[in-house]
Amino acid sequence: MINIDLLRTNDNKTIISLTNRNVDKSELDKITKFDAKRRKLIENIDLLRSKRNTTSKELSKMKDKPQNVIDEMRLLGKDIKEKEKDLSQISEQLNSLLLTIPNIPAKDVPIGENEDLNKIIYSEKYETNDNFNPLPHWDIGTKLDLIDFERGTKLSGSRFYILKNKAAQLQRALTNWMLDNHLNNDYQEHYLPNLVKESVVRGAGQLPKFKDTMFSDQESELWLIPTAEVPITNIYANEIITSDQLPIKIVAQTSCFRNEKAAAGKDTRGIKRVHQFEKVELYQFVEPEKSEDALDSMLNACVDLCKKLGLTYRIKLLCTGDLGFCSNKTYDIEVWSPGSQEWLEVSSVSNCTDFQSRRSNTKFKKNPKSKTEYLHTLNGSGLALPRIIIAILETYQNEDLSIDIPETLWDYTKFKKIS
Image (cartoon, rainbow, N blue to C red):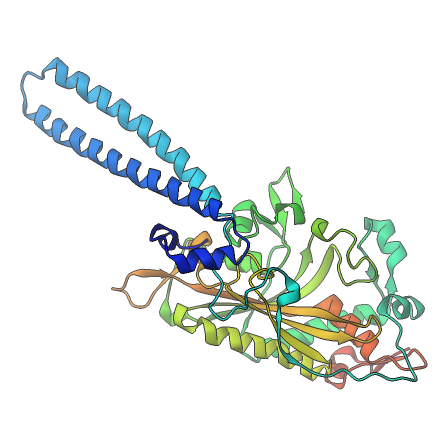
């Protein structure tokens, strides 16, 4: 949630930044009007309460209490209750509007309406072999009995699949390898619930915007997580952390569940865009002045994994129109997939500044006597498993259709080749 003080001051830079994120200015005007009404009501209620308190003290000193003063007190109490009811309604409406406004982009985020205007800040060149065109993963996966699309669909419907044999082992090996790499960078491993309360989903910024892309159980009122970011964001909700605990660096591997309604008809072949997948997530809670450095360190950690796997990669700085709802600044890491002939996003690393901590009410104190402040939160995929598996199957494919396993994984897979 953005800091409403930035809208109260009618800061032109804030308004321009949000309109660059495709926010309608009329929505911002609604917020400032509701906020003005709310503050005026609070002022009126405070005056009425003060009057009631003063009159009440005067009455307590009187032996004979005038009936007209008693009647006035009753009317005053009734007026306060009605205004408090109005305040509750206006506060709820204001909060609902604020929940729909995205984070303010960083100054160096490029301005653009959509993903076509993202800025490529680094790209390795991919090599092509004129004598050999590797098969896309959906073909090689079927030929080597690694991926069963037909039976996955039979079990759960479209966009589900079964990983089999050495592909399932490869996924397990990749997960453990990634976790171990991040543990070496001082992250603490967490095992998290896959089902969370609605307040947790809202605190992480998924609701109300992404309601249609999530799965939920109406009876229990629990939601399946789309990423480990959701529960991690709320671990310290409504708590005050001391500065000596920071930074808090968490890594977790979870299943991720996404309805993907918004992407209907896109990437329907293979396992690029599916309803359920595994992902290793990185997350940090840091002091505000340290979040930019933390973003760079997380980006480097994720890029390092791509390098160790020997995958051709590139880094994009997302523009305002493609920036995630909670993000102030995001880098995407993509790897080249020679069989599919496309770049695949395997990680998004984002600085969410104080946007999520305001929603989850997560604060810290620099010292026992200082005021509480909102923390900055950062998250990043480190990495998403399906697309890394795709890249390995297609990058390390041989003409005899066997697949070499990157050497860095040998101790984890216990095999060097898939055939």
